[in-house]
Length: 391
Length: 246
Ligand SMILES: Nc1ncnc2c1ncn2[C@@H]1O[C@H](COP(=O)(O)OP(=O)(O)O)[C@@H](O)[C@H]1O
Ligand SMILES: [Mg+2]
Image 1: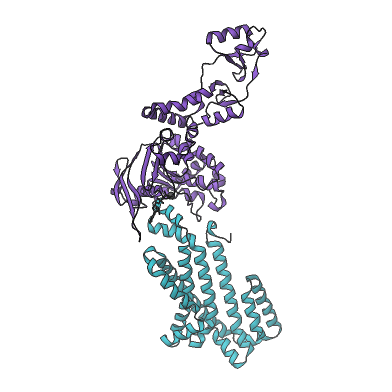
Image 2: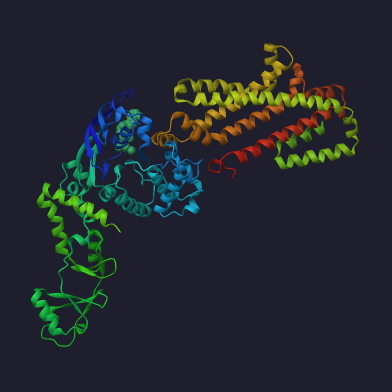
């Protein structure tokens, strides 16, 4: 857990003093990612660097797991905090292995243990250790350097990580991939992370909580869903953007919204039986599945009414299906692309997992709007469910 | 005169070309019978070469031993306010011709080994200090920040991050310094410092081509050898990640 208490930083400059942090109070619970978000120059980096004492605070306190960090030795403190900077900062004179082993060696780890750790971590981010351990940073692509930068900070398994725009210097496609990878790792590692970003989309995606900064002050500190649904003031609303409701779509997966109690039927079912089933379920349509329980089409009650034969004679193909793990933005995008009000969802094995409709989506967005504070906790649970649910 | 010109051109050109030139010169010298004339001075050559190499090694070595730490010291943040002024003075120092440095050294220390050593030492010191200082300042700030943030001490940052990343530039400074040193050492004779300059200058005075070559050829060979050695060291000793040659 990281707690900031009245943290203040005043830079003395020849002109007027600059207040880069103004009585910042916040708490990041153990295992969560907190995003410091705001426009350039608002004091995000300053707040972050006060935590590992690269910048000494003017006043205020910082507690890590209840310990006042001003009482600790700077060097020891830093060795126990993972630190990732935007420029990555891999040492060009060292191989990938040597770079990863820097902090373990500072902590006097056995060299073999440190090397093993370097290989394991490379594996974790999908870089073949045999190929990459001996390479120099200049022999890596930007995305590979970024990955090594992150695992270098994880090398000594610090409980706390500070990340200053860690994925800022990378192209959008690779950024998404690395963000996903990182969330997957975090789901297992459960580090307590302070993460600076100026990108609202990144913040919504990565954060359990978001702190919005303006001129050294926190304007709002809340879950991504609450910030998007209930911006505290005009500044926050403006910063998160006019499309903030659409951004909330990314926070919910199809799984959380889909209706699972949908009548299903096989192609060879008799029409009369299918109609009977729909009447009992009080439904207007049924999803047709194959022998492996995969959705292959649908039938409606109106079209079958008074008909005879088998379901296959009345079945329509499905325009598209969505994975049940997809977020609502992807779902809505598919709906619009195929001009349909509903879509069938599939699980990891392609089996039918429910149906999601446009009203379901709008209801999900409304849920947090109406409920106010109470829904915040719910949203947070949904948020953590999302992390655990990551494939 | 033509011979001297040929030698100078050989030194100025690439290493391979200069080696070839020295080789061709050797053949020409041998075939023209000058080798026999030079052989008369064999004892002088060995004695003076030893003296010459000692001058180069002692003054160059001392310049490295002092120049690198001074460069490091000037690059420390605590020296920020004075470092630029000191470097300005040093830069003016480099514009003074080495012959003048030698002469000034003599006015301070008289004649013999000490002024020769001191003059050569001062002439080689400047490029080393300048490159060490500039190389260390050129290490990107974010590398130092990453190192500090990871919990390195100042000494560890210097030894594991700053110096390795400035090493190529520092080496270039040392290489330049030694080239200046080797090129200036024959002048040591003028202030009684000995060395192969004795054969060269006396040869010129007496119009004795054999004697002149007996001094010039080992001097040229030494210059080529030192440069070759430094090039190899630069290639092999500097880590691959920060070595533009690899
Ligand atoms: N060392 C410094 N000296 C003076 N002012 C500084 C210093 N570092 C940062 N600042 C100022 O503090 C403010 C916050 O900077 P910073 O924390 O880097 O912003 P951000 O990371 O949000 O872009 C800016 O106005 C910046 O100019
Ligand atoms: Mg910043």
